[in-house]
Amino acid sequence: MNIPGQGIFQIEYLVCDVNGTLAIDGVLLPGISTVIKKIQDRLKVFLITANSHAKQSIIDFELGIEAKIIQKGNESQQKKDFISQLGPEKVIAIGQGANDSEMLKEAAIGICVFSEEGTSIDAIMSSDVVVKDGLTALKLVQNPMRLVATLRR
Image (cartoon, rainbow, N blue to C red; front, side, top):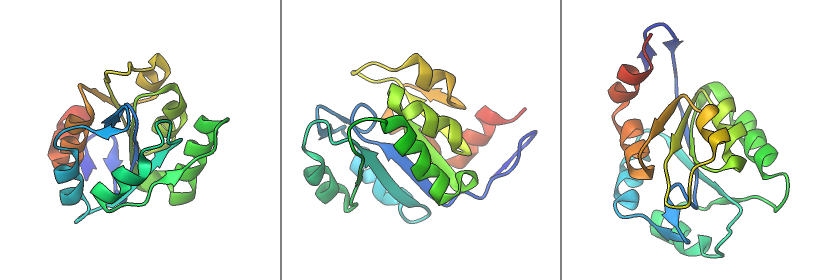
């Protein structure tokens, strides 16, 4: 993806927070499964979560992805470290909570979503793009020219 004024991005990974971003109260938002399955043809998709609602195994089954469950405490750093291990220059990250802010900042492209759970001002300020919901964020990833249009300088 060539973003004028920012350079060429060779994205290999999509890392998504789950609760508040792709799911509400532990239940996937409508349309999420369909779009993620299409994205998996082009990118390796990771889910990263503290499993707050203890329903992650259901979501994993629906998406065919085994989420990385992080430990309670220092969640922001754990998410950032995961992005660092993948190679931040190869990652698009999507999130909305305060504990997502560091991963959004670390990733080549951070997308913050507005959520029924609320959206952290830290997540907003750490992102490159802010969108209305998780489905819209995934559609940006699915249609990268939309990201180019938004991020070009």
